[in-house]
Amino acid sequence: MIVVDANLLLYAYDAGSPYHQDARRWWEARLSEPRSVGIPWATILAFLRIGTHHRVFRHPFTVEEATRHVAAWLERPMVIPLTAGPRHWEILSRLLHHAQAAGNLVPDAHLAALAIENGATLCSTDRDFARFPGLRWENPLETGPGGAA
Image (cartoon, rainbow, N blue to C red; front, side, top):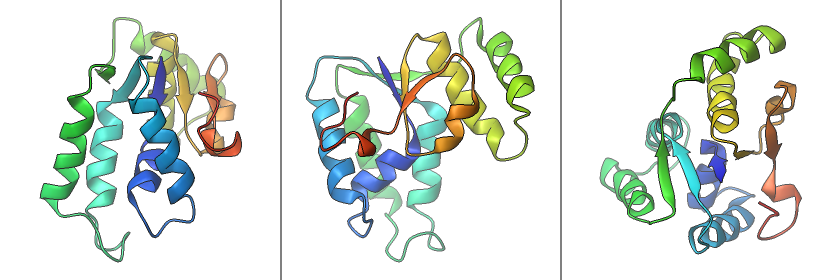
């Protein structure tokens, strides 16, 4: 299983991003494979929050467009909306303490804990994930078109 961070999804749908083409190809490839794709609710909410924000994007998504994208993902049989399981707090608190993750790093620690708890690889362009011990993560945009995930 892979776990997807919001930055890859935003790049995949933002035609103005310099990462758009590679992210789009990577995301479409992931959605056409049988391998499980975990999308945390935190990722979905970040996609909706950032993607519809007029101060972030020159042409943000409408609520209808953004929710249509999310609905299309969730209809795919390989997509699993991820929630915290019984070991989440134990893993999260360990990651927070080890990485001294505070402020904006707390949501990253949450995604890392979800990936660890589910035995998954976290896919993100955010290098901050390297600070979390025991997390398998990769930036699929650095591994070439289609990624290695």
